[in-house]
Image (cartoon, rainbow, N blue to C red; front, side, top):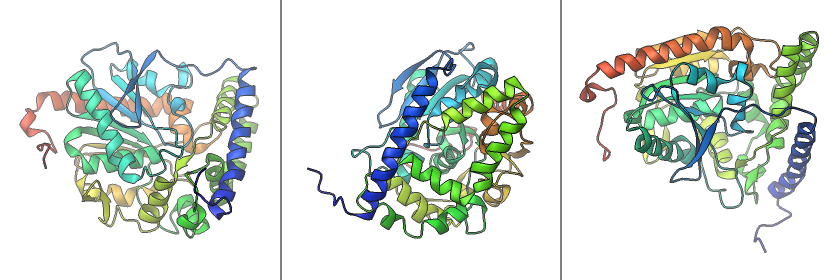
Length: 379
């Protein structure tokens, strides 16, 4: 029998929201009986020397840029390849990229100790080890959305020799009580240890509930507004419903990661302050020396520009570009529009991929010893 106290507050909260997770996933599966399902590009699952795995996609250009896509660990990664017309994966393949998509482990009692160092260093490093063995490429382009972008940034700061370029999509990097919904969320979780006492993981439904309380306009009212605006547009309505279905695919977070995020990163803003310890080394924005393309949404309440730009301004590279996303209809959650919005795929992604290919060509002309961040493995 598990030694945890089943009367601990964390366990009681966990059990209630675990049941909600099960209910929501059941609704998603029932929905699938009446829907064509998710459209995914051909791919293979690749194991790494870590709890994470990779999806490897078939590339048209065997000599194109190598890109690692890093999703947020909340819910599933298939939003990057939901349907051909709004697939970030297919955009990259069409641009000649060799694409890998990270699959975070599904937390259980065996993964509860996984923390920020695992997500921001160990699992990403194991993924790039596999990519290097398969492609021979030492430095890959890393693209992350939301919390996935946070992890990608920490990885680029901790492992500059592994990153050829960094693309950040609404990635929170600067935190404080007045900085967007995440700042308000911290005020709802005064003590992460108390909330998770006795629990192995934090249910996805609990995270969704906290998010809705912290940002009701983004997670409740704007979704209803998007549905109303999509009703008379079949393509937009299909996109809206696909995202709504995706939101039912609840994925919990390991309790160790949740505590590290809330108490070790969000509450103290330790990355921007240069006080964040990742795998035995302090990291700060100044350690990010790869070229950076960063996208913000001025209207986004979840990750507003002020949650990104103060860190971006401190990056250790002058080769950075800041783009603004103008929004879409048919995306349900505005925070996801950069991945699934029609405007994003018509206007934003061609710019990002042109930036990526330009830096890839420049990198190929540069001698290996001149590559930014070059260092030995022992450093």
